[in-house]
Amino acid sequence: MCGPWRPGAAQSNRGGKTVKVHIRNLRPEEVAEVQELLAISFVGLQEHYAEALSEYAEEPWYGPENVLVAEAEGRLVGHVGIKETSVWIAGQRFRTAKIGSVCTHPDFRRQGVAARLMQAARKRARGCELSSLDPAGEEWIVRFYERCGYVQAVRSQPIYRVDVEALGEMPPRVLVRPARLSEAQGLNRIYNDYYRTVNGTLGRTTRFWERRLCRRPKLWLKGRPDFLVLEGRIGPVGYLAVLPEGEAWRVLEWATLPEGDEQALALLADVAMPARLHKVSFLDVNISPAERLFNRLATLNPTNVSPPAKWVMLQVTNPSLFRPKFVAALADRLPPGSQIKEQEGQVELTCPTTPRLTLRASWSHLLSLLYDGRILSQFRERREITVRPDEEVAWQAVREIFPPTISHRREMDGY
Picture 1 (cartoon, rainbow, N blue to C red):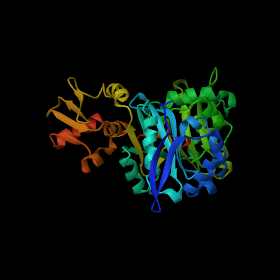
Picture 2: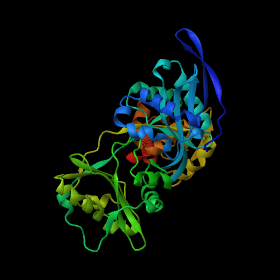
Picture 3: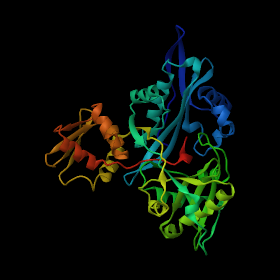
Picture 4: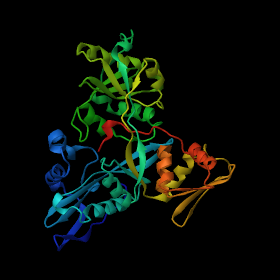
């Protein structure tokens, strides 16, 4: 667990009267009440994810120890999930508290309930190095999480469209078949080996894979993907997850072990065959140019159809745990003689470049820059960080330390 949580109470003002709000862990018998609260709080949830909502409590991470609720007037009026996982950033695996499904009953909004839940969630996550959450698109929601101590970071959803005719026929002597439930652990190994080089990759468990292979519904994931594996000498050496629906079938994940790279296109070719029968012309592959298999895909002349980048919110929850991995991540980027020190609640990164530069920022801002350097221009414009001397040559040096990374996570890792 990320850290202990002790229940607490707070006062809230409702309709001119003071209401006592109690923050505590979920009780097992309250799962149905939580489902009702989520359905009321999130527009379209019941319409589009009814079955997934009914099974939400069966997800491997969900349980009383990982869920905080707000109780007032004898009922649940707020909810936040705290999923302990990990995230890969710059080659380092950070222990992470993934925050999600934050909501307040409509009758109790704008009374500080959500803020109290977020404060409790932060205390709960002290044993983790950082916490993250995916905000809805509204600007006011982003501002709310900033007031809770989170910092914006850039997250992409790179998608490249491939013409199925470019894939040709299945190569001979290559076996592609449906994945088996017994291979959940093996697929998790392939996933970790392949995606750990991609900033933003979240950790998974064997139980997560078992539910996906059983095609159980998942909240915030539209559709239930099918899984194919590329057979090697002693088991799968690659896999593909596809949603075979719509005008362009969506390849959510395409990953291999190094020994499967040469035959990786066979997985796409196997999907292309039924796609042709259904008169589907394209496959939309979720993949970034930073991934090992992108060069294979590039031989098919794909078209970039990626949507605009979105936000993810990040926060360093325990600087003493975060700092060693942050320093390790920058080991090959900083010139000799660089120093990192904390001063007055801020962090100073000094580099003996020409000219000598000093970057001053919070730990959470530095985390965001490490996650994906594309956020630097926004931080500079909003004066959220300072660089001395304030000259373009110094800012360019910062860009080289924190380059763009096309950070992203897989769709199956939604909350």
